[in-house]
Amino acid sequence: MMLGAAPLLAISVNAVLAIAATTARGSQASCAHFSPRDIPGVSLTAATYFPANARVDITNIFSSINASDLPAFCRVELVVVTNATAGSFANTEVWLPDDWNGRIVTIGNGGFGGGVTVSDLGGIAVPQGFAGVSTNTGHNSTAVDGSWAGPHNDNAIVDWGWRAVHLSVLAGKAITEQYYRQAIHRSYYIGCSTGGRQGLKEIQMFPESFDGIVIGSPANWMTHLQPWSIHMNLNVLPPTSSHFMTQNMWVNVIGPEVMRQCDTLDGLKDGIINDPRACSFRPETLTCRPGQNTSTCLTADQISALHRIYADYYEADQTYIFGGYYPGGEDAFPEGLVGSPPFALPADWFRFFLLNDTQWTMEDYNATDIVLGDEINPGQSNAIDPNLTAFAAAPHNGKVLHYVGWADQLISPGNSLHYYETVHEFTLGNSTLDIDDFYRLFLVPGMNHWCVLPAHPWRGGNAANAFGGVSQPRPLSLDPQHNVLAAMVRWVEDGIAPSTITGVKYHGDNPASGVAFTRPLCKYPSTVRFKGGNPDSADSFDCA
Ligand SMILES: *[C@@H]1O[C@H](CO)[C@@H](O)[C@H](O)[C@H]1NC(C)=O
Ligand SMILES: *[C@@H]1O[C@H](CO)[C@@H](O)[C@H](O)[C@H]1NC(C)=O
Ligand SMILES: *[C@@H]1O[C@H](CO)[C@@H](O)[C@H](O)[C@H]1NC(C)=O
Ligand SMILES: *[C@@H]1O[C@H](CO)[C@@H](O)[C@H](O)[C@H]1NC(C)=O
Ligand SMILES: *[C@@H]1O[C@H](CO)[C@@H](O)[C@H](O)[C@H]1NC(C)=O
Ligand SMILES: *[C@@H]1O[C@H](CO)[C@@H](O)[C@H](O)[C@H]1NC(C)=O
Ligand SMILES: *[C@@H]1O[C@H](CO)[C@@H](O)[C@H](O)[C@H]1NC(C)=O
Ligand SMILES: *[C@@H]1O[C@H](CO)[C@@H](O)[C@H](O)[C@H]1NC(C)=O
Image 1 (cartoon, rainbow, N blue to C red):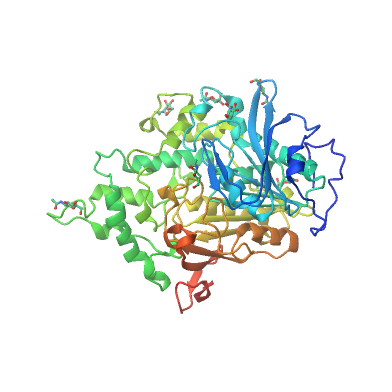
Image 2: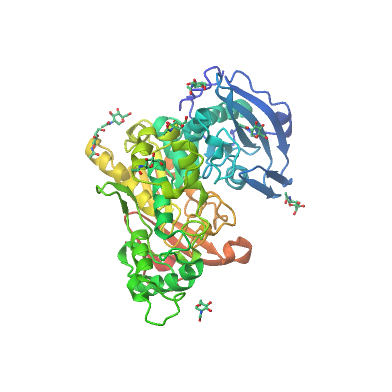
């Protein structure tokens, strides 16, 4: 393992340690006296000790936590200089549990946010014994606000694109090794949405940073995702147009018809479409009859809009831009996305990252913007390099575990399939590696964009949506079968690759309310299949 930012550390960073009782510990005293030295561009602003079960009540503009069930840890707050000339910096935190497992995990962000992900430092890293690292990516903002990027705030855009995460990984490693006075055994990453993009970006640029990354629904193709989002909005907006569909129609008219046509194809009527590629949804069945109440049926314009929405997006010259919606999840349809008001984030990207035109509105969108976006690639934030050889090949042997909901309407799951397939093709054509040895993709039937924003409808969907990913309800168990981070650790450290993960759905998505059902998540390209038996039990399914 290489530690680029910590050349002055006295300890050997090459040592691979046995993780046993010898693993170093933290304590109240080590936290109180912690004084890191010789880490260029990194300064400590606070080190705060939280005893076991202390109240941890921390809020920033992007993320918050309010828990009293964490093990003891030391919260280290850092300023990480990202460009000394410009005076730009990121705020980064490293949470260091007393009972350290010898590993480090970096946690990603979401959207344009804009704050240390304290929810998952406390929800994932510390309870599982990892030293946890997370950064505000160089600015403070909510997930949907991109106004900080303009006008021409180049350093902030690059920091968000990749630089703040990278420098924070280096700082986090150096801090962790100084704190415990011991080399880190292994380095991991977990994130979803923008967090998925950040993990991919880091392994594409700096293959040594992580031994394994867990990524959910990555926003890794920014220059196509943002045009696609505008395209989807224009397909249905404005609300006064003949092709607009209200949330009531999505939930009560279109959603039930999708289920009627698609749900039972997999042998089980359960409101979950196991493989939406198997269903070609025909909205024509909802065509309005003369005199029918138009809130309960579709006009010809609405039907054409639906055909555009459920199709992949191609430009006029047949250039592939992005995947479409897949049938399923309409009952949790986010009015803010293809609705009124439109989802704000994409327009901010055009205004503040790409065009530098604060007056721009989505009606100004045209296909030239896609070409311009690919040329400029603001902040170099695209993470679409299909060549993962340096990360995946020996001696590094890095691993990628990727998941996405089939009912993700914020970032089409088609994007995940597309990236996986480009890596697959590249790997076949240009290396002796087998993608299955380093990159596995899991599709989650029925799950929406369950990534970052608590209590948001994008997190909806009737799905086994808890399996240890960021901002999910806690998994049924922390073991590798139920918890993606543990599955990754076992893959990296014991060579046992995950072939299925068992997800759980809680009643009301609240673990305290009990288990509704469990389901296997299957490794792409296999899909989950009902064998018979109790449909609420994962044992009644296999992957085929
Ligand atoms: C955190 O939870 C405690 C206990 O329920 C409560 O007193 C406190 O107000 C909460 N903090 C916030 C910011 O909501
Ligand atoms: C740092 O910021 C300065 C001033 O904005 C800029 O000229 C320079 O290109 C930046 N350097 C890097 C490496 O981003
Ligand atoms: C972000 O917020 C922190 C904490 O309030 C502040 O110290 C820092 O200056 C802010 N960062 C930027 C880039 O404004
Ligand atoms: C908008 O500003 C950004 C940041 O300075 C720059 O990278 C980009 O090229 C500009 N866009 C155009 C269309 O000039
Ligand atoms: C049409 O259907 C909608 C939704 O079911 C209902 O709210 C509305 O009252 C109906 N309008 C008429 C004229 O029946
Ligand atoms: C397309 O949009 C860009 C940016 O808004 C604008 O500069 C350009 O003139 C538009 N092109 C056409 C053909 O409308
Ligand atoms: C893929 O990346 C590796 C490592 O960076 C490089 O050596 C190799 O040339 C690349 N392969 C191709 C076909 O570009
Ligand atoms: C192999 O690598 C070259 C150079 O990067 C690239 O142009 C080509 O498309 C790759 N082959 C496949 C099958 O992806």
